[in-house]
Amino acid sequence: MRSNRARLLFVIGSLAALLSLRAVSNPAGSGKDPATRALSIFSDVFSLTRQNYVEPTETRTLLDGAYDGMSDALDPFSYYVSVSDRSAYRAQESSGAVGPGIAVARRGGFPYVIAPLPGSPAQKAGIHPGDLLDTVDGKAVRNASLWKVKSALEGPEGSHVEVTVFRGGDEKKVTLSIARARFEPPALSTSWQKDLAIVKIPALTRSTPDGLRQAIEEANKRGVQSLVLDLRGAIGGDISMAAAPASLFMGKGVVATVVGRRVTLPSLEAAGDRIWKGRTVILLDDATAGASEVFAAALHDRADAITVGETTVGMAIVQKPVPTQSGGLLYMTVARYLSPSGKTLAGKGVSPDDRVVVFPGETGGKDAILERGLEVARGAVPGRRAA
Image (tube, rainbow, N blue to C red; front, side, top):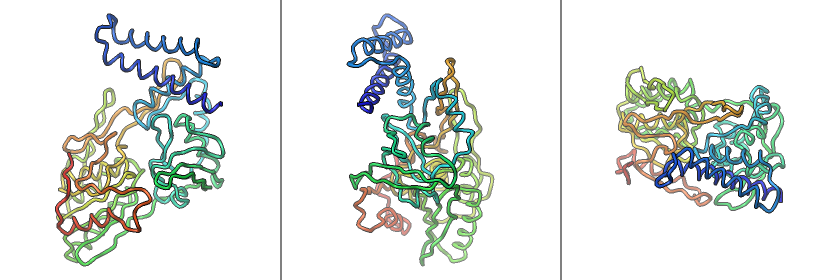
């Protein structure tokens, strides 16, 4: 009953917030300014809920649900910390707790796995992109704030966390015990075929430019004409890490620009020289996020790279904690990255030139994205140009 009540209160609060936002954008015929009309609608919903809901409601619970709903309506990565939770939030931030390596977001009030971080205990334990988080250490997190989900996953280094998820494709609950530990993403690796090289980039790190340079120099020595860069599952790392490896394919110039309403940041620029002039194919999936998206988009726009696979996460963003006047905290997206051609990456991701549809649990042991990528690298015409 408590779970149902919490879900209903969250929905009520979210609806109030969304109705307010709608009133701001469509105030025609209201006779009031948009802000006043929005507050009036919110007040009506709030009052009616308190007076008519089947059980007595707590004012703070309703208001926190509304605030949480507004942040949830922004994007999957923003969240609200209430005044009463600020001390717990600060304590968690400064505790030095370690997580299992799961990148988490929230949509419609439900937390889900963007992807396990490369090389993490979560990846080794079998966490999948798209898993819906149900419980953490036996406690339901289906309606929890994003920061509370992250907090629940974290704990003392060396301890374990039990995570229960709903998994698409398999249509079942899966429970996993995962270590909390520090880790490093695997190093870049290259496999060679007669006419091309496949470079697996688990994540963009400080060592990536040197590893890519070595692979390119070896490819030039062997007379290889095509490189396949596998960025599937590449998530994490600072977005600035995209600049140095991008220069190896495009030379000097803009890798990405940053736009925001109140935040001004310089463009991301590549400073090195171009050393690869052959054909480049980039493999993407729905777990490619952040710096890897910026890198792929730059090569697509400025080095004629062909992208193959699935649309990426859309996580090329700048986030910042913004204190509220009441003492709460909004951790929100304040700026977003654009590709060199001006395409928005935040929330949209990189749309592949050649889309490969992969259904969970129905691969049949085949790697459809890699197979198609190899065909394109050998001259096949991409099936669809990105819009």
